[in-house]
Image (cartoon, rainbow, N blue to C red; front, side):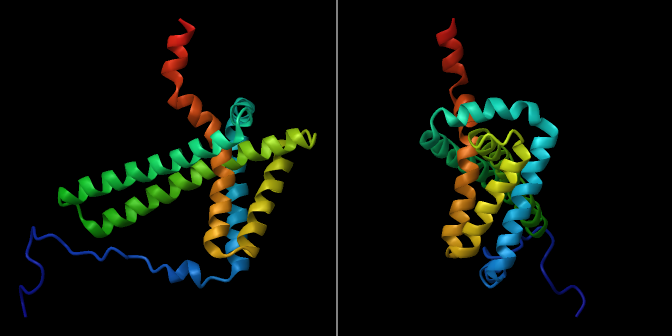
Length: 190
């Protein structure tokens, strides 16, 4: 039948669950651990390679108060997720194609989470290398990546993911705390 289908301009209904979570939950733990290790070391290694000279300041900021760094790191993940979700809903209400928007939003969110994770693992690895007197932040990065991968391997799925993101949150939290309170620090300096 010619002309059958969705009328032009009509909103496309896309199910909320476009990706099946079974893809992750049914994946063997060894594969999830390998992906966690590769993501940690690849994105953390990129941060060390590109911005290695700035990592020591981030280590000092996070090491000054580790529990508070974890809270601010979780704040960074929440802020990124909120911004992506807000942009998604605004663009969807404007009638942007939902299928493409969902894929693009997922890619932006996934890339952002991995970028924050890379920064966090680079900082946590550098901190570990400093504490163990290894002298090379790359060894610390591999050590922290291995520890996170072992957590993903032996712990239940959600707990392993929480450990992976928790390690990264501690790494990025000190810098996020400085960024959030930068205006107050400038006012106190004057």
